[in-house]
Length: 96
Image (cartoon, rainbow, N blue to C red; front, side, top):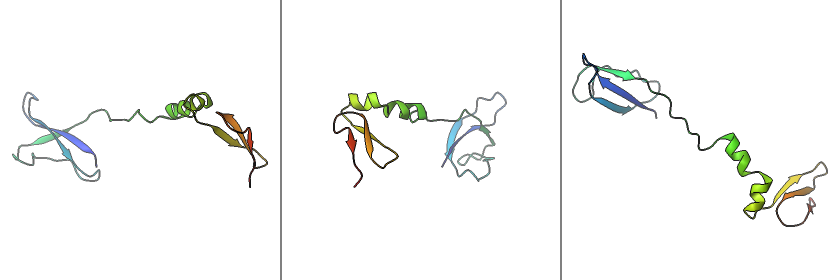
């Protein structure tokens, strides 16, 4: 559930800022849940995760990186056999 930020409405915009966890489909709050003062919703930049990106995954699965960390990588060929692209082990594995 998303967390929305609200500010208590004052003349100089110095009102208390607080956060409320609400379903996306619910309407914005009009009054403070505790004090009953009028509030307005604040709009912030979205919190986007950049920890798991397509480029990072591609670099992690790069044959050189896999081999460096002791893994082997095989890719399936047209005939159903698997050919080694990184690491140690047999160069080809037959499909049973």
